[in-house]
Image (cartoon, rainbow, N blue to C red; front, side, top):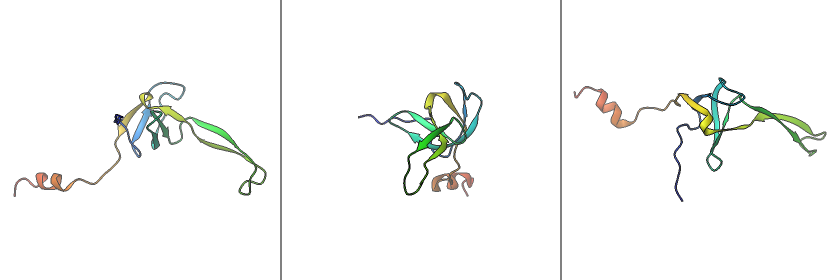
Length: 95
C-alpha cells in the first residue's frame, strides 16, 4: 500500500480553483486521505438532518462543511510552524 502525499494539510489557507465555489478561500479543517478530499472552513456548507435523540429531542437541521476534492484547491499560505533547530543555526551566519 502506497502512502500518498498531498500538497495541503490541516491548518493551511487555501483557495478553491474550480467548481461551484470557485474563488472562495478558507482554512482546511480536515483532510480525508482515503477519499482525496478536504473540508474547507466556510466553503460548501451543506444541511444535514439530525434524528431525534436525547441530545436533540425535536431533531435538528445542522449546517456543516461538505468535502471538496483535493485537486480543486490551491495552497495560499502554509500553516505556521516553528523553525527547526538546524535552521536556527544556519541563520546565525556562522558565528
